[in-house]
Image (cartoon, rainbow, N blue to C red; front, side, top):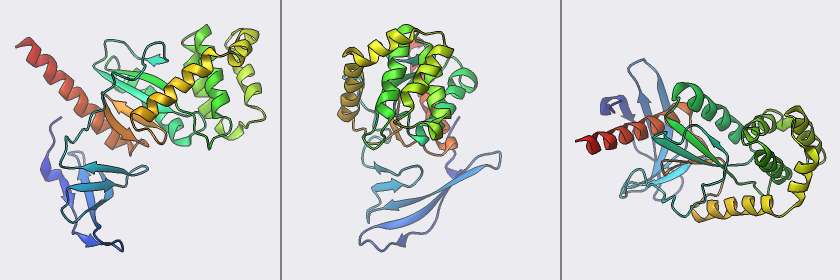
Length: 258
């Protein structure tokens, strides 16, 4: 896919109530007549912008537009993985099972991994339960301990937690975890012992520290080959980021062959 500047429309600069901040309407369309719009806020020099899709994200236009995060310090081994190790795109997701935006992200990522970008994307899940979500840490422990019995069970737990968010509470989350474990033929006593032990909480704490180290403050935060995407923007915009990274990965392979 080649970006076409003629399909990017910018509205007039409008002063806002905040001194030194201006707003503009941004509209991007494609050759199928589809479009997505967002409001952007800029400083007077228009070298810093805030894009208001999702939870809002600031971009410094004087730097590399992708602002890739160095993933070397992040612990990626022995974590939940969806997709092949040979995939050209790795998405590291910091997420919380009680987060509604994470539930939406999970559905989109599953579709990408298994259907729209099959064999091209690998997702590595990092637990980042937020303090504001009372049952998220118990869910993270349940899914992690299920993974230790059967790696694929993690994704079944994730799907169940996300699907039933409205029915789960701090009072019944363990009951829900037990029911899911029994349905998947896991050993419940072993699961409980794992959740009460030290190893699983330590791994979740390590994930949280990794998130803090790379600037995670909210969920979901996705690192697409190091490109940070916060809050999962509109689906077409996220697809564009993934497609651009696939194009870049393809160009890199082509250069190696030359």
